[in-house]
Image (cartoon, rainbow over all chains, first blue to last red; front, side, top):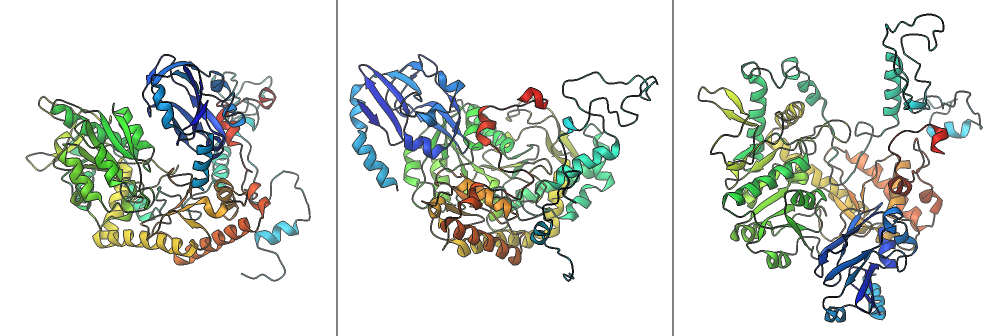
Length: 123
Length: 517
């Protein structure tokens, strides 16, 4: 199950683990990503907390925790090669995995169709 | 100029060269200057032959150790030429229009320079006995008086060395004031459009930052702000006029709401140029604000000189002015309070010495040569220039927000939609037009932002030339002249640099060409 936030992050839910990254729209808006700062393994966040930082040639942005939970893994490949965020944002450019403290929070997020409508409204 | 018989304009010369390559690689007065590391071997000494062979060198045993940076020894004229040639490849306010938004790149009057070079004021040392520098202290006292009068604030700390340093000073004072009441509190509120230094300052002072969204007009969303205000909030950091170039109309209501919960109001004074002489921040309810002498008061910056960011304080924070601080003794002589004493409320020492004396002199020279009426006109002309640019460009570019602007005008990249040209390309093409690009991609609340600040420096003639270039570029982008943009700059000393590679794989130390490959 893939969900989206208004901040252009995606969440792929697999059992009780959520993988988080940024959407293709987000990477295009940012431009070439040059640096990613990832959270500590085991750190816990509430929905909306700053969990990571992504920096491009244009701007630095926060990556927010889309739900409450604890970091279970981070994508260390991004530290050596931040361009993965541009080349494969929905795949190998993932940021971190986290536990799902409250599955109910997922219902508040958009599915793919709703996110695509949201993007159309931004134009 | 007599134009008969010889080509004189740059285009004519370029067309006239007929493909002739020079033997030196130079182009007449455009001289190729190698990196200092690549201009001969480290054995060059500047005072002797490079390889004296069997003879003893004239270096008197001062021969240099071999080094992997290969720094050659230049003679004095070679040194002068190296740096002069490099400086001629640079761009400066003395060379042309420099509309870098939020930076207030105004003319640095030469009278300021003359005053800063008066021997009795320029040849002082910070450890001189105070009795011998009363003139310098009087300059600081006079500058303090002007800053307090212009802002309507009772106290000032002159020592901070730049805008962000001033922010640090202000927020440390806010923290000290809360700590004196027993609780430093937890949050600082910062609007989304703020200068990046604002949240950085708050974080450095141990606060968590809460971002306040902007409304559709580009101003702080008052209701969203009020919703965040409770007794965990230590203060707010707001820029006025804000980074969208707009005056925060609700500022008095914001100040009252902030004060009602016992918090403090920090104003980022980077844009004071738009209101100097017209509005006193103290009257708006602001508790502390830094003033960039290197913006509003015309001291050089952007590589031309050090910044200086004095901070003014309201009555509520006046006790927290840090040391070193200028004080008047009972005998009317001026002195410097150097150390924190028992019973002081302040948070301690801000700087080792007393601040940027040369900048104090230049700023005071600017203030006194303009007078209060002249400074008022500075603000009026800066706002008039920005509105003239905005009105002259709004039919071909896309304004970010409606209504008149203050000292800078803000455009989004909407007019470039579907042209293939991005804000970055547009900025690079401006270099070919002979202008320093505007501020781009900031503020972040506007997509592909282009922030243009003309200042009061520019004449209508200069603004019209700029408008002509900007309109030309906007039309060229819409007409699909992609090469003009994607390959720009064509006429700069260097073509477009690879910013992405430089950031992803920074090479911070010079390497010989072979090693770099």
